[in-house]
Amino acid sequence: MPTRRGAAAARLEAPGLAARALAVKAVDGVLGQDIALEDAFEGASLEPRDLALARMIAGVSMRRYGSIGTILDSLLARGMPRKSGPLEAILITAAAQILFLDVPDHAAVDLAVRLARQDDRAQAFSGLANAVLRKVSASKEERLAALPAEADTPAWLFERWRRHYGEATAQAIIAVQRVEPALDLTVKADAAGWAARLGGRVLPTESLRLSHAGPIRALEGYEEGAWWVQDAAAALPARLLGTVEGLRVADLCAAPGGKTAQLAAAGARVTAVDRSEARLQRLTENLKRLDLSAEVVVSDVLAWKAEPFDAILLDAPCSATGTIRRHPDVAWSKSAHDIGAVADLQRRMLSRMAGLLKPGGLLVYCTCSLEAEEGEQQIAQFLERNDRFRLEPVTAAEIGGLEGAVTPEGALRTLPSLLPDEDPAMAGMDGFFAARLRYLG
Image 1: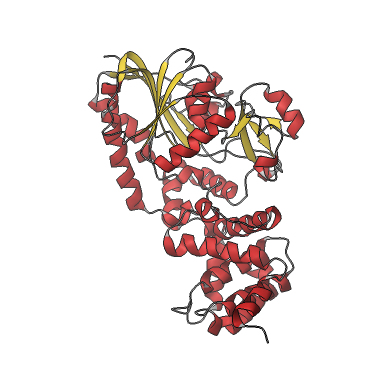
Image 2: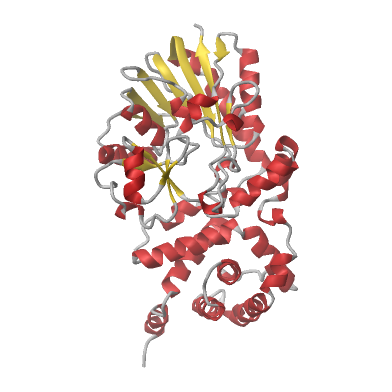
């Protein structure tokens, strides 16, 4: 007679169950432990196909979390049971498959019930899970049709965007965020040639975009270090420094290192600074793969001292609301309070820049945020306080002709709704703000 552990192991062998279990663990980590979704898959030992499925399920679960939660709430008369362990994540990931993925409904229901039965806290609610998910399957079309377009964006965040950008732009932003984006690469040389090899296209901004990439490490050019993964918008701020060959350039808050690689590839003598030793280790590994070099320093920017640089790229910590299309959990892990807290940190970092720049040097300040407090307002207030800095306007020609990405003041402001395309998965870019400042000394 099989032991309880043996029986559980046998059940885990059900096709697709291991992938669902990992997706549940990832979503449960986001909702209950404040773990970033991308970090939830660190160290996973599944086969590539199962790992890709787990990532897809978890990604859709968070991308459409608002819709899924609204539908589940309507079917749980007493709300989510307390002390039910991963039941909420089990229901969310199963509903994501039923509502938004090309997965047989019966398989999604059956595997969710199996997962509930295997958890000591959730097993008492396996019958409830079965009943609720069957109702989701039976009425999914009408339930989805009844949801507003903004269901998958927290109300407080959507209202901010509507006030700042207007109704039409806010709606365009959230529409892009509901679709899993394509993969963007920055290539060291011959973007057109690599586009032909990888079946992608070169964007006006010179980034390479792929629609169906598969495992990144399996792509041609990865091992030889011909390119690195970097959203098209994230590749723009470093370009605002202009020709950097031979210059001493500090990349502050540098990890994971895409901008460091850009600067090093352009011939700069780069010092990459970040407070996270673990994240800098990844940066170092990436530079090694790319056959690029930089001085790597573990330090808090607010306390770091060095000889003045010719140029500085400050990619300041931020709310990251511009990256929701790639990191959908950000929408549900942030609050209005977070925006105020990081804006204060950004102010303090900016105040340190004069001591790190040579007279006449350039500072590019950027954030991957859609919030004005971390972008337009931050720089306006900084210039009011500091008459030793002058804004040097960005031109559309510097950023691939994206006139809609240049603000009236001359800063860079990309939106997820830029770069429209007939194929929604090939559209958009992250939301970034960047301002170029000259230090007068």
